[in-house]
Image 1 (cartoon, each protein chain N blue to C red):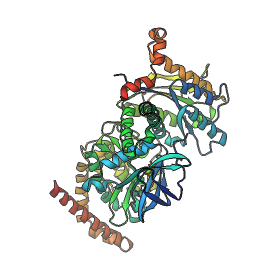
Image 2: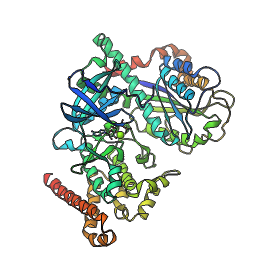
Image 3: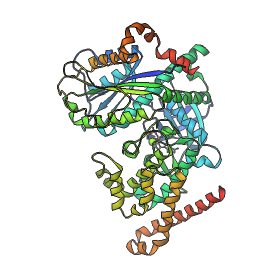
Image 4: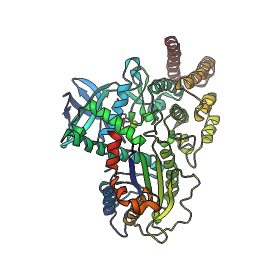
Length: 253
Length: 309
Ligand SMILES: Nc1ncnc2c1ncn2[C@@H]1O[C@H](COP(=O)(O)OP(=O)(O)OP(=O)(O)O)[C@@H](O)[C@H]1O
Ligand SMILES: [Mg+2]
């Protein structure tokens, strides 16, 4: 039996992008490839600003994910919650699609509530058991500096959450802007982030916030992630057909 | 799409699509991460209705509420009354109706009635948790805001089943202050010890009050901080052994922790009266006698419990 693999990008930022491709378009591109994009806005005392808020909402919408705006202290629990909810949502959508194919037009909404309660239980179990790969993208532009220790906490904390799942989970962490590129990979794919990991060391603080390009580069991480590089070329086509739909179908029914 | 505040406002009156029960909305009771809870009237009976935009999350809560409904176990949380859909702005939304629990959130209750009530309430809470655990779930998001003290009989009930998790799975929802992993005391796998850890932290937090608690929260967290608070608090110190055991996951069941807390509580109620009476005559008098009665009831409850097993 094949297991479903869920793929997510989680953007942690505190304001608007100002360089390169639109992050909303980048998120749409990610979604197109079966990757959900979630966004967390971190604010201090000051507000996010209407423009920043709108951008966050739009990225999440285009990326098929969820967003939230929180204080640094709430970051850790928000990361976990958003990830889980987005996961439930993706599985729900897939299950719904399957049901529509079986039942004709009607999806889950057309089932009586007591039947749907059972579906909910199943969706939850699937969420727990499926593999999950998450790339966390951290905005390290100048204004984020005072929040980075909280972000660092949250990264380690998220690793604990992932570890507590029954399904296989991996995460990677990137920061943008990078030294020479838009995105620097700070932590390559791993299933455990040590607490000692320092995000703040060796950071380039700068005024640019290339959220869009960072998302695009993160998408590439998932392609790499699929197969060992030696096999990537040969199996590319097959790998792409093996989307989550197909594998979930096997898993659910 | 935001994870919060996505619940659309309810119309003043609505009817369920499947079971066709009619509801009149009286007022909003609270809004949170998973939905909004309203006080409603259904055929003249008051109920609480929870509506959320993410139907699956609401239905998961229903799942749990359903499985703890039977018999005398129902005291854990509110009774489930109805599960149905309604249409808000042309969009279908899932809701459930439950028993309306009239009372106060545990933290407000303690603030008003005094910290002497803390051990009494925690002991009660542990009995509730024990039932839930025996059904194969942990509560997960244990915090004063998710515990109600009923106005009439002063019993505690759990509300908000959004964090309830099957034993062995990853905890579905948590609040950092009460989360074992955040205190570097373990992971987030749903085990009985996860809830017991939260219960112990809650006991500390409720006893020392909000300000003291806040001031101790800066910097990295570890259970040593909690031990410091316990050492400095006359009210907590007698409970240090069970608290420490809970921090270190040494209890196998909620019942075990309950028994140890109860033993301390019993000892204190027996030795205390004279000392306390001279220290705090007057205003505190009523509260203490009320507390004394509550403790007696608890002791009676234990006997009853033992008898039953
Ligand atoms: N059965 C009930 N009887 C009376 N009041 C209730 C009941 N259920 C919920 N409430 C009130 O509504 C508030 C919100 O409910 P609940 O905690 O279930 O929402 P939530 O969206 O899960 O919030 P959270 O952010 O805590 O997860 C509660 O704090 C409580 O005051
Ligand atoms: Mg709540």
